[in-house]
Length: 194
Image (cartoon, rainbow, N blue to C red; front, top):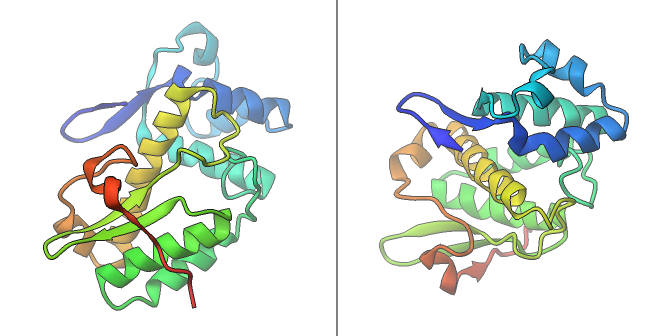
């Protein structure tokens, strides 16, 4: 992923395994790309074409809707598309950023059937740690793709928390990272939702 001061982008070839899988599974990928204003011919003629990151989320959303799978089949475990609405509703019930982060972590763990999200707290820091090292990614052997998907998920998660907390997450964030980040070394599993 590359980033400028105003827009983050990626190269189209980075998500080719996702597009190919979706196409093989019945999604009209060329039609989907065309509807989003992305020339489908560039998949083969110009795979290094820079695409805005927001278009990755749009592509993922359309694939997810096609499969009725919130993970867009990035996981080997299907989650009904409406599961996302459930999680957002749970997070909206939180009265603080801390409660929102804990709710997000515990509900994501519940949905995905494992402890992939942890909350780490000290006197001066609260961290949401995503440990996807054992997550059942469909493309787990493609480290570059799982890294890209993980980074995109961190951005999407931060944006979700920021929008649901009236900007509190944006003002509070000091960094982002996955399980290899130092704050993850002593992470605590998120508590189960009540």
